[in-house]
Image (tube, rainbow, N blue to C red):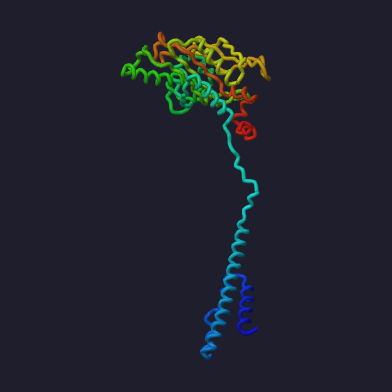
Length: 358
Ligand code: PHE
């Protein structure tokens, strides 16, 4: 092996030994650098004849090219190895199952409320929302409940700050305050359109579109056991027009209950009762014809024909306008719908209970 061949062989071997790009560049300097072996050999040609220079120069150039080729090959190999190592370090195991984020769901009471709104919506009822902190006027007085009426104490009211002794504020004990709240707005709007103004204290006896509304929401009473919670849900219903009778009330509620429970043979009973804001008044009982509760009468709400005094408080002339109202226990419906026997389960927030409704 001549000198050049051995230089090339040494260079190749040295490049193979380099473990990193930095080491490789250092090794390169030993051959191709300013005082490297090849450079030294070039310098050594100065003493040669022209003929010798030609052949020796060509041979050195070939050797240099061979070293450069080996260098580049090794550079590429080191870069590949580096990339490979990086890919390995950052490897994703695509066969691992993904991390699951639990999906939430609506509360069973919300599911029932959604269904109630959909069913009444299909019967042409709009949905109104009222405040949970209510005035004594809308909760009691406007609903024909006199100051000393037993109904006020019957309701075991939570009173809250901010009102006066004559007009206290309270957490609404039922959704019925929405009857007058909503009707007053409805009457005002259509009276403005019809007459251009709304005179104080004069009852409206002109023509207007019917009031057909439900008002679902939270209600509060000082009460707590397996079937009573201090916070519970009701859904109010109100239909006021010129010719709305008890017959319409019976039809609407029967149709509603049968649709809600998806049982066409479900039977309703209107049991005579008393509410200050309806006359006559009736409790609504339902009876399933099949299933675990078949044959039992279950109370689900109150109802009645709107009392003329309440019609007046709506700003309407009771000689022309008449209607019915009802108030249903949404939690009760939810318990019956899903076979839940303790109301408190709805409000404990236990995920094991709630996740069953997802
Ligand atoms: N508000 C009554 C209650 O809470 C129910 C009811 C509503 C009765 C409308 C008649 C008319 O018990």
